[in-house]
Length: 155
Image 1 (tube, rainbow, N blue to C red):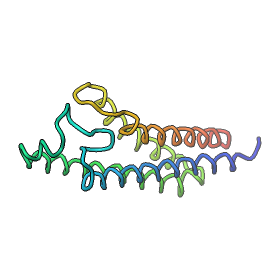
Image 2: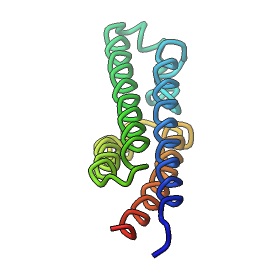
Image 3: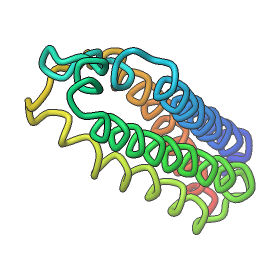
């Protein structure tokens, strides 16, 4: 049996890089809420209605959307922090509980959030809206699979 530690380390590092990307996405999401003209990344209008149009019609709705965006950014950042910590301090050591928790955490978030994006209720540019999360998820999956391979060969 070969030494699986380098592969485990590479997997954990990729998982941490993806977690940092989740945090970065959350920061951009948060900043855009306060400085952007659209609603969020890749969503400039809601079926032609701009943020300013909606604010002129009903400022409470725009404030409520902002409230949801801030909360969403917080949960995305919290997920990134949790996944990063689990990956760095647990997965790197080959701890199964850490790998399981690090994988389940973003899977639950994505399983809840992603399907609604495809209901067709509003137009969004999927490249700028979901592209960064898809790239981070791909990096995470590669890392998680490398770590899993190393952990199963060590067991």
